[in-house]
Every structure is written in structure tokens, then in C-alpha cells.
Length: 341
Ligand code: NAD
Ligand code: WQD
Image (tube, rainbow, N blue to C red; front, side):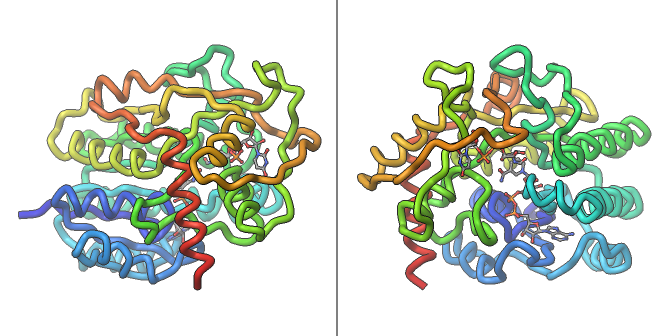
């Protein structure tokens, strides 16, 4: 019998790619999402890619009554991958209560349901944002966490703490927190990808929209940083590689291969890439020029961060495969596909 995996936020960017990889690996996928930041068409697109339609319900995880009803109707869930959250850093500064409520109440509701309905395994979407500006690079999982610079970042730190404390109080619950670095790109079919609402905050959607003519120019936030070319450095990984890590994490938990009840893994390439190098990679991969202008630094930006992914490489047997250029090409194909509509 296929193992049933509940994917919260599964019509979103990373969740939809993960649903595809789970189905490809023989899991049964059930998605819940309130469609706050995604479209219902994603379900058909997942079916188009995999040949299998995942189960789907429109559900707000903050609605505890509806969530409880969902679990009472959906038995035998082997694991939950919890993507559902608000994720815009700037917006979280303006609307802290909405972010704390949505990202933390949903997690608490979900973990209470796990206890009540005897679901043992949880994979949580965390973020490299928990490290702030690390003292040592590449950053390892045991690096000290820095005070969060945004309510969004704080929801990831507190979310990790909620999970860690729940696991240590209940031997029936196991969890893996995955700290993503910067996911970019889209499925090679160009059927699913990132759908930013309004003006994108993140670099790659801004690049693709500028290249497409939707934005006049990319504003590059500073080139006077203490880095080799003066631009900020990040670790950009292809979303399909990231999705595959979730499949491995689910298998580790459901096969009982985890070393402790609560584990944390960095998911990145291990390569630091500057904003300028990212723009050049996009231009190289697509043959399209990006009009950009260097402006002031963005307040709160980290100067440089990239992952030491060796713990995930060794323990999960996972590593990134796609190159930066490949990821940029898929981001461009996706941008072109959505603008066709
Ligand atoms: P996304 O916005 O594309 O997907 C999140 C999905 O969750 C959306 O479909 C949204 O409608 C849904 N959702 C939000 N609140 C909900 C609720 N209360 N009930 C039900 N559904 C709800 O975001 P994403 O980029 O796919 O991110 C997925 C997860 O990964 C998030 O937890 C995010 O914080 C985390 N993360 C993302 C990045 C990134 O750069 N994209 C980096 C690190 C961590
Ligand atoms: C990348 C680089 C910008 C836009 C954010 C969140 C973090 C995590 C990932 C979820 C930076 C520069 C960007 C633009 C630019 N998300 N940039 N012009 O800052 O690493 O992290 O997303 O957990 O929590 O904070 O990603 O894509 O916004 O920026 O010059 O228009 O691109 O300064 O150096 P970031 P990003």
C-alpha cells in the first residue's frame, strides 16, 4: 500500500514541486491549502506532470475545527510536510500579528492534531534566515541562531522551537526541520513555478519580470559590501532539488532511520553566488539582457551567507544536481509560460 503524505501549502511554490516528486516516488499525496497565495489550477498541473491527481481540500489550517474534521476523515497519514505559511519578509514587518497568527497558530493546530490523531512524522519548512549574518561561512547547522530581523524570520525560529519542544515531550512524534537557502527556478515542464503576488521581493522573480518587460529595471541593493565583487552573496538552489530533499526526509522518518526525534538540515548548494553573478548566469542561460541599476542597500539584508550542506549530503544522501544556469533557464521558461495567458 502507498504511504499517504499530507502536504500543507501544497499548491504553493515549493509544495507543488514536492508533491510532484512524492508522486513520482510512489507516495499518495493529499494537499490542504487555503489558496491565499496559490491557484487551484496547480492541482491539474501536478496531474499533467505526474499522471496522478493528488487529493486536495481548500482548508485554512488556522481553522482548528475544520482541521480536526479533516483529520477525522483522513486516516493513516504517514507523514506531514508543512509548507503552509506567509513568507514575505517586508510584509511581515508591516503586519506582524497576521504573520505570527498564520505561521504559528497553524503549526500549533497541526501538532495538536498529530497528537490527537496519532500522526508521528513532520517535516517543517525552515529557513537560513534563522542564522542572520553568521560569523563563520559556510554556515553549519550548529551555528548560533541570531535574533530575527523580521516577524517572518521570528516565526521560523519560534516554529523550530515549538517543534523541538513538542518532540522532546512526546516520544511518538518525530520531526525534521529543513533550513532552505534561496530556492529558485521552476519545474522543467514550465507547468508549475513561483507566482509572486504584486511586485516581487525576491531576486530571481524580479530578474525574470524585468527581462520580460514587466518591470523597467532591476534595482540591485548595494555593491559596497565586504565581498569579492561588492555584491551580496547567497546560496541559490533549484526548487526541484529542494523538493527531492523532502522526499528523502519523509523516507528517513517513515523508515525510522532518523538519529534523534528532532533533526535539522541545511539545504543549499554550498556555493556562494553574488547578485552580479546571478544576473550574469541568467543572461548566459537565456541570452536575454537584464537592465539593472545599483541603488542603496536594502535595510536588513544579510551581507553574505551560504550553506555547508555536508550534513544533508552525508546523512540524507541528498545533494543539489542542477547548476545555477539551469535553474535560471527554468525560471525564464516559467515566466514566459505564465505571461502567455
Ligand atoms: P508559497 O506562498 O508559494 O506557498 C505557501 C502555501 O501555503 C500557499 O499556497 C498558501 O496559499 C498556503 N497557506 C498559507 N497560509 C495557509 C494557511 N493558514 N492554511 C492553509 N494554507 C496556507 O511559499 P513557498 O515559497 O512555497 O514556501 C513554502 C514554505 O517554505 C513556507 O513555510 C516558507 O516560509 C518556507 N521557505 C520559503 C523560502 C522561499 O524563498 N520560497 C525560503 C525558506 C523557507
Ligand atoms: C537575494 C539577494 C538582495 C531583490 C529572503 C528572505 C529569507 C528567505 C529567502 C524565506 C539579496 C538582492 C533582491 C531585488 C536585489 N525566505 N536583491 N534586488 O534576501 O536572501 O532572503 O528570501 O525564508 O527569509 O529574507 O532573498 O531574493 O530577497 O534577495 O538586489 O530586487 O538579491 O539584496 O542580496 P534573501 P532575496
